[in-house]
Image (spheres, rainbow, N blue to C red):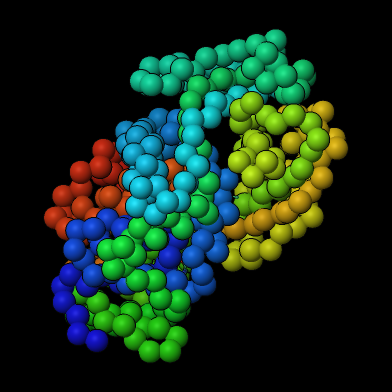
Length: 372
Ligand SMILES: Cc1cc2nc3c(=O)[nH]c(=O)nc-3n(C[C@H](O)[C@H](O)[C@H](O)COP(=O)(O)OP(=O)(O)OC[C@H]3O[C@@H](n4cnc5c(N)ncnc54)[C@H](O)[C@@H]3O)c2cc1C
């Protein structure tokens, strides 16, 4: 295969890779995505799909600007993907209640409201038990109040990655089902990728292997501190009415999804690369679900899924050129927020490759160098 400087090989075919491929392809790069399994077969296809830019690791500082940029891009992107592919990614504005059951939890929420209420475009306020029940009559009357967040978004992750890849294909981006096992190098240049059976040449290589990206540290001799954090979700059916909004409690959540099922999650488990579901996770998710929505005791389990989040050493994403390498880049580590942050990570990756100047607000906090 003859390659030129504009030939990009992206290792890994999750949402970060597909969106990066789409932007590169649209700008005339010839892109090949190497995916060991199949499209959306890991976290990017099985995530919950919440798009809440105000909560999670790195918020408000240093990631608020970045998180808001990412959130702001989703609505337009959903429309563009629909026009390009006919796939509706299910983007919607969905209100949220974060329940508190103890004074300590309430105090923590009220502290967050102090800075959240100044963020434009989101109405965030404290509601007491009666207020919470008025907004969603099925929440537990045992809660002592809730943080109400108006209009954070949500989408359907599998449709999102499918649409991103279909749109990318329209610009000649190709996904090849092959596992990468190393890099081919010449001095400080990466000239290609070694595959299980064969090789592929490349002018530019992007490592976007989600939780497996840490394994590439050995390939390039630079520590990429990313490990897997397993999360599980239950999809259940109940004869009760659907929920008006997403309900959160601690790291758990529950919402009625467009498939008509109630999705309840989640866990944070250090289980290596083991992606199987467990009965312990099922029971702990169910316990939180019943604590939040006690009336749904008829809930029938339809499906249980498990997948691995790419967790960096400080929980924030990494989008950078790999230190010491001329044409090797990395985009990973988005943890619990990779669907939300994928828009900004992909754009920042494109900017780095194309001009070296990143235009995404707050992306200066995503460097790999922060770990050295
Ligand atoms: C239970 C759960 C719920 C979640 N909910 C949300 C949510 O509500 N909102 C949100 O924003 N985020 C959520 N996330 C997080 C989000 O799903 C991830 O951060 C995001 O999908 C990571 O995308 P990625 O492209 O970096 O990695 P991945 O989706 O993991 O993709 C990486 C791909 O690389 C491939 N690969 C790995 N090694 C190789 C190799 N050697 N050669 C070729 N291919 C390789 C893998 O097969 C995989 O397909 C959730 C995650 C979990 C687990």
